[in-house]
Length: 123
Image (tube, rainbow, N blue to C red; front, side, top):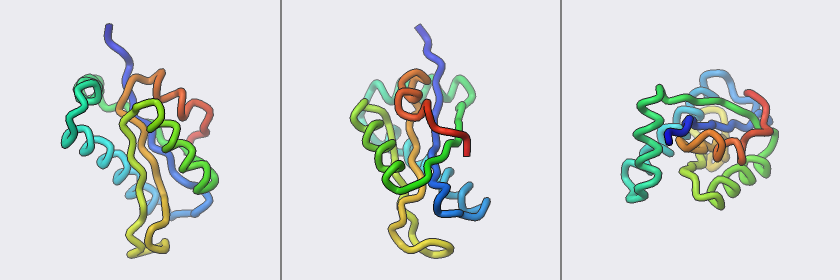
């Protein structure tokens, strides 16, 4: 049985990042989650990645209002065994070094991603 697959990218809105900065942080999170799968040995995640790629790489970009909320999303994804990544900014432009900016959840089956991100609003 094939699942609908997706990746959710969650950005902190409280940081008031510029559009380009937010886009870059979202891209960092999305790529990092995929690289972890490619470089790892989790067969389930690798299957999810292949299926997600074959379905057109569905993504949704969502928002939280604080670092605490971002950490909660990350922790919930990890506890459910989902591929996830959290991004800390290098501090070269708009933000202090180490600022947590984004989390990617998935690629994974949509219903699992939604357990973590289903109540969040679009960015």
